[in-house]
Length: 287
Ligand SMILES: [Zn+2]
Image (cartoon, rainbow, N blue to C red; front, side, top):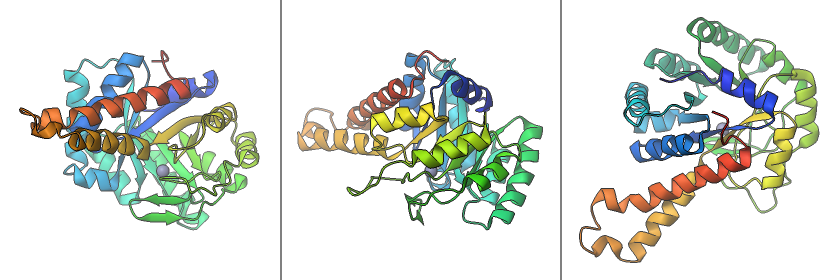
């Protein structure tokens, strides 16, 4: 059964660790992440962007696949199925499709409109027992064609959104989606600290978790980050392992072309990446 992310993130904030959100793209991705969470006895959040949802034949297909897989694999750790960077329409579609957690990203709207739309979704999610993530201020990099400029959120705006009763809050603290540029200035811990001071117990979300050095991740967790999103890193690991298999000519040996063999090294690489992240975030044995 899928659960809301509320309880796992409340516990994470209290226990000073973070739960990983790992984005899924297909069956192999989903299976690799679920099995690793179970092996590590860790709660987990499966992230689905609107683009990935479309790729997987729509949110209903995703919800049905994930629910069935949790059941078939005998997964007993808490699993939340979460819309990543949802539009207002996308959020409503995922609520309808059976997701257990929603992110409404209204960060590109003027703050008044972000507040109004977030408020409406808080009421809907509350009535259905779903968790809701809201976002303040653009985060840099690219996600499904949405480009931001490495912006830093205004802590007062963060408080305005947090006070609406959202479950968790994403705020720009100098983080960037995708691969970080060489001249990246690092996370803005002054901003993160100011946001936590104003938002108190609210679990904070760090997007763009790929390539942030381990010491910065640990410091961010100590300053109130309870959910960290990882996407690109699994993609890079999958691509590298698949490349190695093909460059070694293994697809031409015996039945090495069988997709179940061809995709296996990438599958194992995702598992290894997810395991490393769960260890770094401190969520192992917190299920
Ligand atoms: Zn993000």
